Length: 88
Image (cartoon, rainbow, N blue to C red):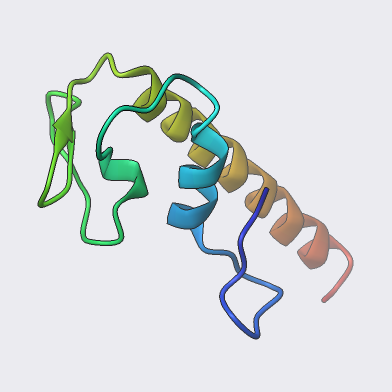
């Protein structure tokens, strides 16, 4: 599931997309940073945090979101390359 900002079709809201797609990875208890609408911080030790909560580096939902982000990035890069090759 990919969420687009209102009125846009070419870019998507990554945080909303990840929050929705990662909800299926495990039972959700309490607030998780990836579902927060505020700022997110990813620390060098792998901790993901928002102003309200933080999760450790081995959190499965966080790992799923990172994997999903990389997949989306690769898809976008491929799309840009295909557009460049087509002369757009």
